[in-house]
Each structure stands twice: as C-alpha cells, then as structure tokens.
Image (tube, rainbow, N blue to C red):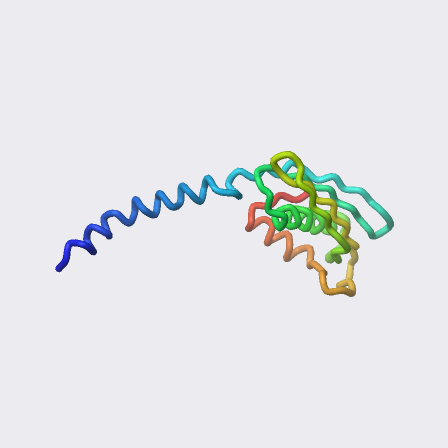
Length: 131
C-alpha cells in the first residue's frame, strides 16, 4: 500500500480546519444586523428600513428586509405579504435597504408573495433577525 493515501488521511482534518477558518473570517461571519425601522404607509402598506454592516452583499440586505416584513405580518395577525419594491444603498462598511410590502390575511395577487410563517422559519434557520 502506498504511503500517499495515509499521509493525505492524516493531513485531511488539519486541511479542513484551515478551510473552515477561512470561511469563518469571510463575508457573512462578521455581519451585524443593526436594526429595522417600520413605518405604516397605508392600512396594509408597510415600509421597512434595515441597516447592516460587514457586508456589501445586496441579497443579504434584501433578505433582512423580507424577514422583517414576515415578522411584522405575523405580529399584526396577517399570514402573507407581497413585495412591492426594495432599494439598497451602500452605507459606510455596510448597506441599508428601504423595502415596501403589502400585508394581507389571504395570499395576495402577484409573483413576489411570501408566506409569513414559512419565511420566518427560513429566517431563523439562516440566522437573520426579524423585527
């Protein structure tokens, strides 16, 4: 039997630990969710301003706003929301997002709807805070 596979097997745990350390210091490990500001625009139209630092990934800012919208809908006794628009801007070493959602007790028309309960479970699994 060749020694190469044995050497590789012995080194593998150290190599994997090194790769894990690189991933832990990469983007995502240092994201700080700085808060949500909610404003009622109309009876069922709600705006959310979110801020986060440690990332320039626009999808993370959008996900944070979506999680806030899902939590808000649940708090108000609604089960669904429809995304209207989101704008994301660079802010210091992070991002801010301004999102608008229509909340409702029935599945709203449109392609960009969210089920608040399902979305909240996903947010918890991904470690994204809500309202």
